[in-house]
Amino acid sequence: MQPEAAPELIAAVMATADAFLRASQRLFRPLGLTAAQYNVLNVLAAAPDGLSQRQLGDVLVVDRSNVTGLLDRMGEAGWVRRQDDPADRRVYRVTLTPAGRKLWTRVEPRYRAVVAQVVGGLTAAQRAQCLASLQRLEQAAAHWTLPRA
Image (cartoon, rainbow, N blue to C red; front, side, top):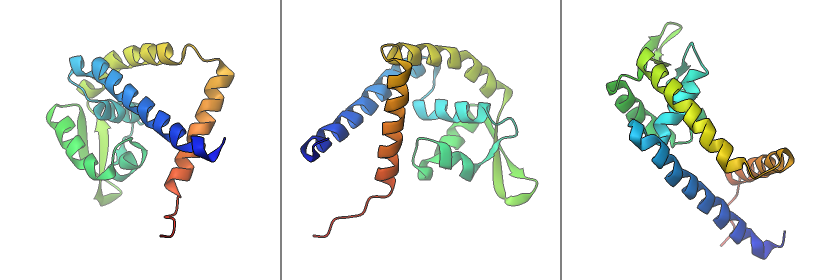
């Protein structure tokens, strides 16, 4: 890629992420969810023993400083539970409640159907290449250095 096309690539990635966020709001809002809350439900659904709040923050697509407030709101809604970790009382273990699992079970098929629509125009090879490229961009973004002034 020509270096002059690099800003266009980043702009396209950001525009795509924004389009996904707006579209996800149409899916989640009628169910009383945000995209971030769905991500919590989805991550915890795959972790029956729960995760520490720190582990959860590491895998979510939200700023870690927002995890506490996000979990507070989800706890008030009855979707997640935070309990002391028996192995380390300084750590909270976060799990889905039965109501949270029921909500996730209701939302997950709808989410998968939308994802299938979005990526349906790509071949398996194109999806794999796109994923690999995005992962490389994510790694590079995580390790960039500030140019000298």
